[in-house]
Every structure is written in structure tokens, then in C-alpha cells.
Length: 213
View 1 (cartoon, rainbow, N blue to C red):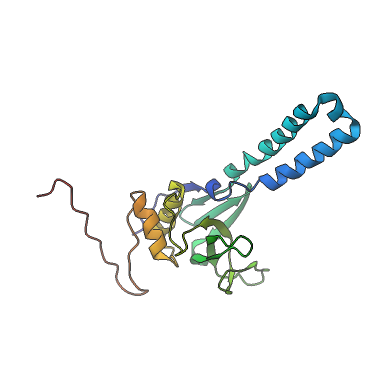
View 2 (cartoon, rainbow, N blue to C red):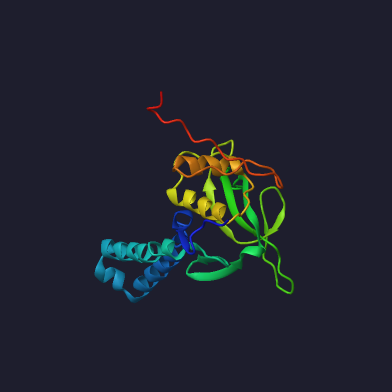
């Protein structure tokens, strides 16, 4: 029986904090060029011109995280990235790929979250090549920093646990249950059922109360 709410939304802005920074920087650079060409920068002074450019970066970057969220209902998921919505049916969702690896440039350890879909016929599928070389079809939900062993760093946002719980409630399988369990239980959510495909789920025993004899 599906116990998930009819509508549940999780904001993904914590995964896309810097998404608006490049656009804001380009706008600030364009503004600086205009101010310099028109002579306005000389009349305003260097400090006001710098403050105006900084305000342009913040004005674009700050609202951007609010344009990233995921909503589940009885029929599927709606993923909104940069205020653009995309709809995915439950029957097209194969699982959540959690691919651990290293950034090619910085060498930082990271985890890529990808909503793995069944490629629809007669549609140009957007293929994503993940760290281990597999080619998968589906939208990237975000990228997280991890420890060297691919584990949570202990500072994971509560929204991440809400995201995992939302997908768990709707029966979406996880690639890395160990990582998901650590995040879920750290924020008071139940762990995933550790069963192989086709095996019955085992009910975890409740933790002993501190005041138990």
C-alpha cells in the first residue's frame, strides 16, 4: 500500500546554490563594460560601480535556488530546474543512480544523483555519461561532496533526507542504499529495506528506549 502523501514537494536549491553565479557574473561584466564605455563609472567612482556589479551578481544568484524543486503525486514526478518544469511518470522511472567518483579537474570526491529513466521511443534521449562510464538516460538532480570512501560528510542538508524519503515512499529503488540510509537515519527517517530484488522486505526492529530496563 502506498502511504505517500498525494502531493509532496522537496526544494532542491541546496544542490544548485551556485547555479545563478555564472549568469550573474556575465551580467556584472556586461554592466561594467557599459559603465566604462559611457563614462558612468568615472562619474560614479570605483566603489559605487563595484557595488552595483556585485548587486547584479546577487540579484541573479539569490533567487535561482528557489527555481529547483521536485514534486511527487499519484501519477509521477515533476522536476523543476531553473524554473523549467519537466514531468516524469512513475512507470518510466527505473531508479535513482548514485554514482560516486572524483571531479576530473579538482579531484574532489563527489556523488552524482541521477533519476534513471526508461528511454521513450521516438524521443531524442538525453544520454548522461557518469563517472564509471555507463550511459544512462535521465535528469541529474544534483551533485554532492562526499568523503574519500563515498560516504556522507556529516553536513548533509535535511532536504536531501526529504528527497530520499519522498522517493522511498513511492518505491523508487536506490543504487547506493548505504549512503541513503546514513542520510535518512541522521535526520530521523527510517532506513531503506535492505533486501535484494524479489525478496520480501524485513521490518527493522525499533530502537531500544533510553529508559528501558
